[in-house]
Image (cartoon, rainbow, N blue to C red; front, side, top):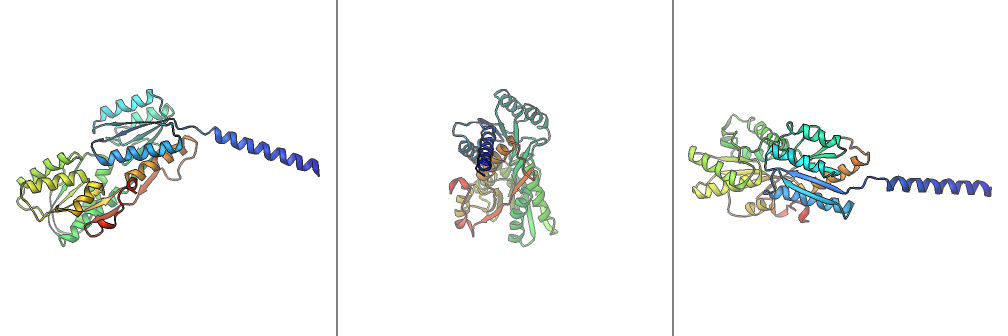
Length: 314
């Protein structure tokens, strides 16, 4: 009996050691490379901050390098090449072009690097973490449809042709198409995803069109730029909605602006999820579904005071 107990103890000890060794053999997260559309947008800055916080939580000495692709595909190819040369363990990729980026993604994966697409899809990536952008466009334009009682002149202020933007416009159009009373004055102008781009686009619209009832801007910086343009030209009575739920839009919704609603995303949580899933993939644990989508919420003047904002602010 004593012998049997001793053998069991040895077996248990051996198993315990084996498990410890297996755990110790987990691939360590030493470095992450991040390339995003534009570091001039607070949304992408928050993605970088969220990723860095999660990486440091996993390994306090993890190195995080973030660069801005400025919506330039060639620049992003070079950035990914640099990450490959630096032997990073993981790349968080906010693809400038979801399809054309594929050769760079395959090259990185062939070098043993886990590639996580963030905010927009990227062909060939290990997994994608993004907002349900079709839903975000639907929420934002449903607000316009209700506010205008199903009729009026609407502008869809487009942006860089990444999957997130294309999906938002698709969602918006599907809602507006439900009513024959809407006239879409423009839907193909690129507001560059920025405040200046939105302002320039809006100045053009307001010069061209004497009657504009609503504008759906594909993100918050463009919406804020559009509002500034309307102020400059003394135009009022326009409903502006967008997507992001950024700190700037909270202020706009509480202030004297034409901005009425924004479908909120959570870039902090998105980035944290991407790093966690990427680290799991590094260690052989693949997600059940490689497309991880987060549900947007509509923030309006009525509910902005109870809106908690992006996770990093909690």
